[in-house]
Length: 319
Image (cartoon, rainbow, N blue to C red; front, side):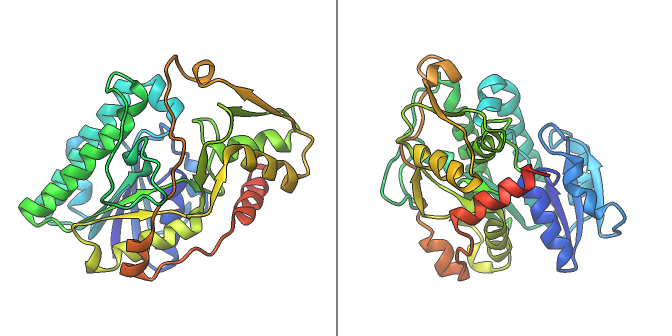
């Protein structure tokens, strides 16, 4: 099978490309390298199974031509990272809304099945025990740039669902919770590589707020397994599925665990959100997924612990 992976030079996209090629499929990667890195695909330099195209999902003729040549699309390309979104809101909105519409329209024209990656940011400030796919979105003011990513990805989901409902496009939607592993960088605000990098250098680990906010972290290998399982069954067409681990940990305890595992001499410092981002910045206090739908539809299960995740990230960053 021939797949188009938009954003395939990125963190998750490159691991997905690895898995598809490993099982014998052919992959075309479309990436503008704004956040993706060619080095993530170096292992396939001499492979006939990979074609890399440097370009944007905003380029309609390019997107149309690539979609017309493949059997399936994994749409991962997006402006990501809180720092990136806050600093470049207009560019981020354009990429995440117009770009996604271009991909979905091309898929609809060609009747090409597509899996769209959305985000746990969809749920906003909802702090339910385990966030289910039908749970309400609770967001702050639309004038707070911080929520623009959630809004853009919600529109993307609605577009994908509408193309399925109105035109019969085989579309699947997944909401990724915090995904972590080798190749992820902390530059755009990703917390685990940022903490681990500081720990390896024995530098202060900066925690935003008081550190009581909680998150769940899934190893990228488990997430890729889930993506392949969701894409591989007709039972997931026309629906949305959470992907993530449900082991919950506070950001402060995460920092302490990383210091322990890496045997670091780092100290923990606290910085107000307003100093790191902007006045009035809002964060989610709690973000825990329900993966009941994913498990029931695909049989997926978590295989990697948080300790393994931290060790894998540390080994990768220490290279």
